[in-house]
Length: 322
Length: 212
Image 1 (cartoon, rainbow over the protein chains, first blue to last red):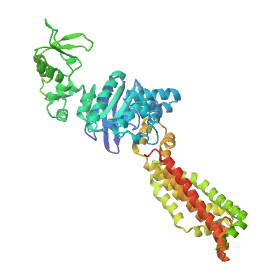
Image 2: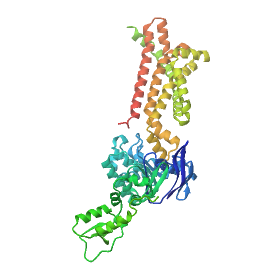
Image 3: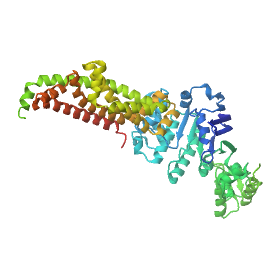
Image 4: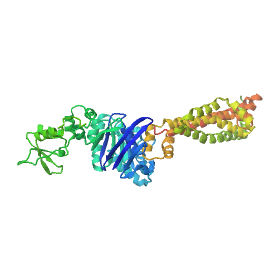
């Protein structure tokens, strides 16, 4: 768990971060989203003291980060950046081994860990471990960057647009892999992004920032359905109903119990409302069964249930609350 | 000219002796210039040195613009004749290329690599040792290479202030108009410079092997 309490950062007279308070729970992936220059990267870099706050407190698991030396603190926190910053004179394996080596892990253990991480990132260890960064594609380099951040198995990860420098197709793929990995590892992650689809896809919660302030914090459907300010509403733009369908999971709806007779089709509760809608429209039945992914039936929904949920979620019809 | 080989054959021992003196004077000067030049280059690459960077390079450059002969004469004026003033004059002469290349090399390291190194928990010293210097390695060797070649050639002049070396043959040959004696100094000096240049160029390439 990491908590920012009234954290400020000013450069001369310029305010970069203006008294921000934010709490990211253990195992949560929180995306700092916002236009460039909104202070999201500065906020992130204060968490491992790459930037020292002008005032305010940052606590990691209840301990003020100012109590440990910057170097010691950073070794306990994973760090991945957009430009990747792989060391060009070191092989992939040596790059990944950076933090474990700094922490004095035994060579044999490091080699095993390196291979484990490469496999985890879908890079075949035998093919990749002895390559130099100049022999990697953009996507491969970013995977290695993430593996390097995970190397010492830190409970907390700071990621500054770690998938920013790759083409859209590979980006979607690496994003999906990363989400699957996070579902398994359950790290506490602060993830800086300026990409709305990426934020909506990855975030447990989004902190939307503008000029040094957090405009709103919440789960993606919450920000879309009930924006706190005009800025939040405008930021997501386009058809917010569509975004809501894409970001809400069926599990978040009230699912009526299944009636007599089995529905013809069923989908997992983890699916989005958009997927449920498509299933309802392409199937010939009026009801769509919802299962828990392990064969257990949770109930069934109709088109009307989705409509009701959407109406409820959007009841303010997007009028900002303040 | 056909007396070159007999001269060589007769003076083999002498040539070896002078070559030894030459290598000693130049070698000592370089052994001092390398740590000193690298120290200056590293110091100037630090953030706190931003203000003094210009003036320091200007001063070092000034040393370089003084003709080597004049620098040797200055050294004699201050320190008398012999090996010590020769070493000091050559030292002053070789610092600039080493310091400048070391500084440029460190500046050439991608910011992202340094940022990542900091973020992963390296100390300033660890960043310098395992990221900045290795990545600047080829630049640093190139600087040492330039300094070595310059020092070997200028080292021939050291004979004029009593430091011995292959210059002894060259200047004796010129004043007595004995081309074979002059060449007995000039050829080994040239070969020494070429050899050092080639050897260091191999090292430079080796340090660049990750840049494929």
